[in-house]
Length: 91
Image 1 (cartoon, one colour):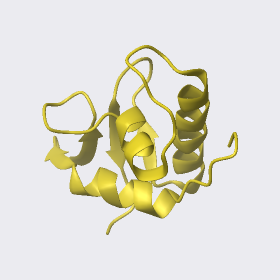
Image 2 (tube, rainbow, N blue to C red):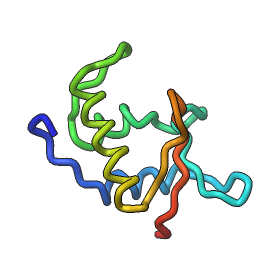
Image 3 (spheres, one colour):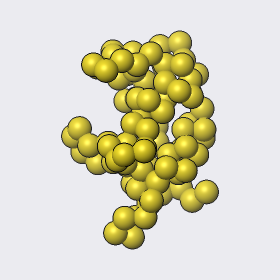
């Protein structure tokens, strides 16, 4: 992923730590106060560049992380620009 090695397990653990139960689903929502957005989470964990406006590298890395989480059956992102992920993998 553009020269970055991303530990999906580490990403998921932080998502889990910032998640809550909402309508019988465990949800990570980066739009909520006090919850890091996915771009900030990946930047803080792995040094992927981030800025206020869209960063092409960060966007590509986040897209790949989102796709891999879905492929593994760990989490599904709500459609569109939502920052909400439903988490399936129990920790």
